Image (tube, rainbow, N blue to C red; front, side, top):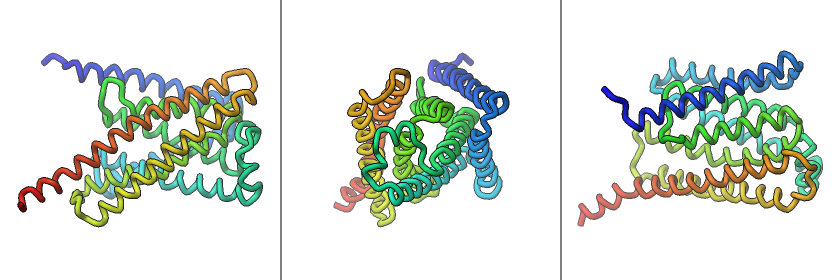
Length: 280
């Protein structure tokens, strides 16, 4: 039976992203072993932790690859958003709000536990990339979720190697507050809870939209604005172009996510409208 254009495109995407993930693993391994960068072991710890969580959910709850992957993603979002809030509140209490966002502090400084949190999250994105490739949990000729993870792995790893813009990247992870509700929605639907009239579903959608606007959309736009404002303060090199490229990619993906979120919201509302028409 001949391959369809879609399956051929999926195979090419899998080959490309598998190759880039392998190159990333070799790069991290080289830095740890040959350059004695033991602080990067937190990346390995993160990857192992989320893989262990995957196995526990698979053997104890469900073997459905999508359910397992989504559950681990929910765990990551919860841990990361809690870590980011802790790091920000702790630093705020130490230096105050204004000094926290000083250019030098964001680019050259590293808040307590920020480096470890970024490494741990980096390990998750590597694990998740592998899991999605293994079970083909993506769609499209150029899967946006795989592009998103690759973009983050490149930006995060380069920053970790060079010990720069760590605090900037911690700020970008505020969006994980919104990811919590994205994953909750997926788990809720897989569990069969789909009644749009349900109070739980209504509250979930309200929180989903609030977090999308403030924790993802606004926060990333503000970070981009800060980068533009402080462009002249960056040293000549790849830091500013790479940061701008990364944020441009994030904002671009956020726009598509907003469209997908709106379509999903309208799709869940349709059964409710149909029921109302039926009652008439």
